[in-house]
Length: 112
Length: 117
Image 1: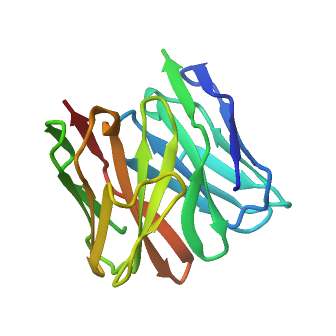
Image 2 (image 1 turned 120 degrees about the horizontal axis):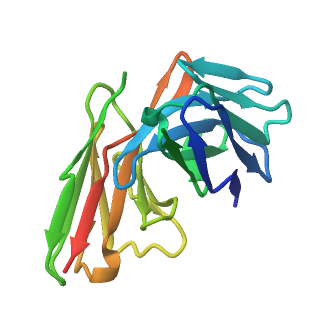
């Protein structure tokens, strides 16, 4: 089965600083989702990437999928307290099938 | 945007009883829905694929007789935890897929926290 490695597992960042979270797969990613989750709550959809080299941005969050479609990064610029939470990457196991395998998550803490 | 609603958001039940969790796609039809489980400080793990009008497909290690899935309509899938035990306490989340011009996307419900006492 496809495995996703997320790094780092946890991150403590001072407010205003930039940060990057990585998601690496051992197999080709057919669809890569980024979600944010506050512990014990549902998932908030951030972005989905499908094409090699694709990059999407929403407000201060940018996600990229590398050309080989095996690694994605999530970059937050000028972090704010509202960015705190758990970030999960999820990957579709096959083309057109949104049965997702999730990474282990990255817990982001923003300190003032 | 697409909305997936889960109900209840939390439930406490006695050991040995059954609990039903509903997952609804509110503004689109979903022939396929997925059920995930998340234990504390762990990631989401896929339990089963719910297919409208046919039997659910379960992941390895998930007991189909314990976790009954019914997908009777294009907007509703239910997960029933039968004879629940404390080890079934977890956070259950469903997702529904919508196919549009931008491709197929997965939308998640708010989740249901089950506590078995």
